[in-house]
Image 1: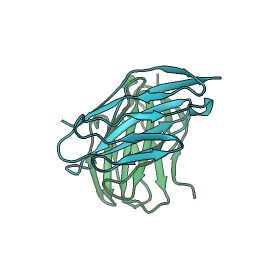
Image 2: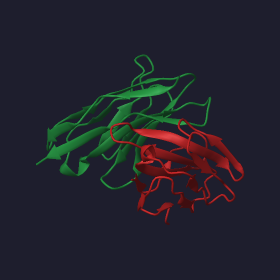
Image 3: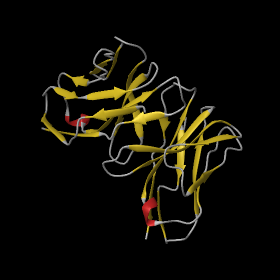
Length: 112
Length: 112
């Protein structure tokens, strides 16, 4: 049982480049989330989804986009990478609204 | 708005010492409360949870009691081990929205 899988684990981008962080879960969870974790800052919610075809903004959505075409996948898109987006990104999923979240191992992204 | 405040770290303890990590919250409605643990290089894992006042969550020797009168959910363990070294996050979820709110994390190092 893989749980939540994120790819890639590490990536270095140049300013202005774009990329997609992949997230997939095999638990048939409806709820999926993207967070960024900056040193000493805890987790900040970027976007979330309550089911296929439905997405909504979290606390820090600027500079990011998401889509949810299937229950399993919830990719996060950076269109014009900026140094402020250097962070560790975590994807999570949950069975329901108030249920514990299951996290992937994270993607460490550096933008130079 | 909803928020969680954790005691600042880092915390360094000797093996078999008693651990307390303080967590207080501000929330509208009736939140569920969670403690997550993050080991180096990994995503967050659920440690324990409590969904209503006076509930006690427990797991792996850790405990936390949901105190509505003091809006607190302090994490305790009677005898820590080196393997407990990690970052601990307090989190809440209210039934008025779809978001989890995480504290900034408390780093624990246990020395032999």
